[in-house]
Amino acid sequence: MDAPYRRIVQDIRRRIESGALQPGDRVPSARALVREWGVAIATATKAHAALRDEGLTIARPGVGTVVAGPAPRRDHELTAARIVDAAIRIADTEGMAELSMRRIATVLGVSTMSLYRPVAGKEELILAMIDTAIGEVPLPAHRPPDWRACLEAVARLEWAAFQRHPWLASTMSLTRPQMAPNAMRLSEWVMASFDGTGLPLADRMFIQIVTFTFVRGVASALEPEALAIRDSGLTNDQWVQSQAERFLAVVGDAALPRFRELTRHDFDFDLTMLFEFGLARLLDGLEPYIAARR
Image (cartoon, rainbow, N blue to C red; front, side, top):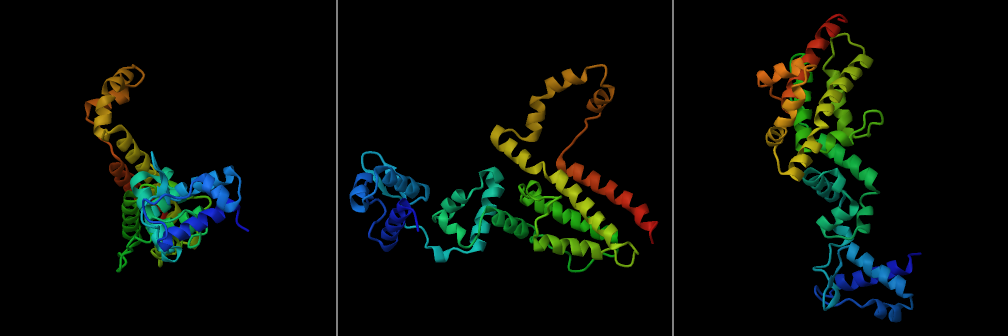
């Protein structure tokens, strides 16, 4: 049986959805709810707080608690796909730390509790987000001619997906991988790239994991980088310039001659450059290993 305050919330929601209470109309005060429902003032106050949390009402100074706006969409209009899409948009623009069921409900204009019908909970939601994002990786319709070209193509597609969704890399687990069908489809495609090489399936899977882990490792810096730019208002180049004096003071230490040499050669660095360098070295290292097992 629902708690008394939830029954009050459900009743006022029904009044809003039916049009009995219009946007801007006053909602019964806590004392009025006490009289109408025969509950304690604390229960009525809790009902008011829940109505505000669900975005149904707002407190208007000098007026009281009023209906916040058009009634949120009815529960049957919600689908898991809409919820996942809203969650991805929030994570893409604001970061995973800002993602909550309440935030999603606000974006969709629904009550928080209504999200739990199409989606069982946040863990299931995150799995669906991962699967949707990985599902955007467009595996080549025509497989490249050799394993190296296949592995390079997939790595670049993964890197592009991580750039579109900076939250994705840090959300995926290596030791407890989420059972995302699209991620498994991608792994299957990579393992098939070694058909004809004589490479055992275990080795193929290890190569897939190592390659994915490399891309994911570099990409794990994307979200912190984006948030740092947003919060500081400085691009990476501007931040480096702001730290130049301090950096040169540290590098001036006699024990750091190689760092001093780097400063004279205009060493440049960004995540894409690191990805390109690391991918090439990874593929170079795999060449003799796979050739020896033919």
